[in-house]
Length: 185
Image (tube, rainbow, N blue to C red):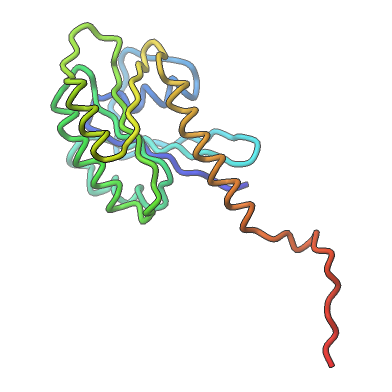
């Protein structure tokens, strides 16, 4: 079974761990410890396994996190609706993903989390302008309520299924080959 690598990146406290928890366990915790370096979970599908890497957003861990970028097929770049500065860092994270993954075809999705809060500081026009200019999908979610989470991960799974299908098309099953060997001489 092939694996598909998904990584979540963004500043500290934007809700990366909460988003993974909502997707994997349909659960939300109001308080939890900050991720140190990275955490990892897997979810099995019919034809592939999705490996989800949840990275630490703290600056002191950014050099360590970059080694986890290698082989990434999809990156979710998160920012918080409560913290406009976290959106300002999206450009850094998008560039880091492009530089460090080693995959020129990496899918990058910009994700605004915490859309359920009342004191949103996000400038939606600016976010849309950035995402349009960089040809990046933009998805709004709430890990707390679950709003938008299924839509987001449907995009990721659809991409993973496409990649898996392309891999299978390029493979030859030697056991099922009906050709008889040609005789020489």
